[in-house]
Image (tube, rainbow, N blue to C red; front, side, top):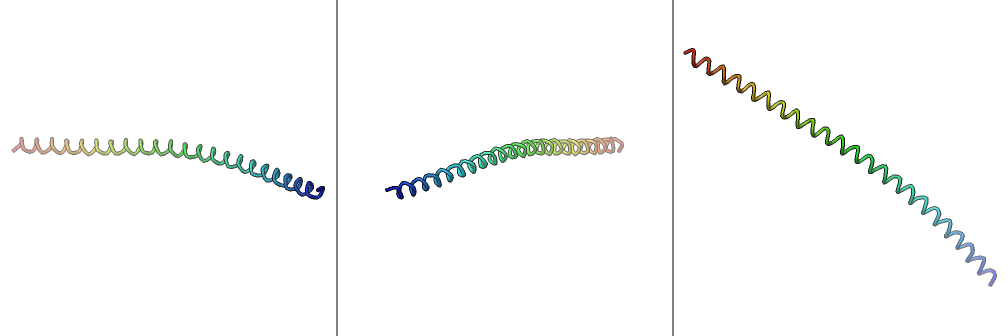
Length: 83
């Protein structure tokens, strides 16, 4: 009987140690998750800024193209009037 109690006590002690290790790993996992979420948020912010910048650049290029088109149209009108 005493031997069985000692065996059970050892098993309990071992199980408690495993629980402590698992809790430690869980905490590490939670911290890694928090860090990954922070990094993802940073990436999303940069992506949003890049997308906004790319959109503005595209609009700027379209405006320049429109100005060039209008300028060419005015030149053609002046040439036509001169004839």
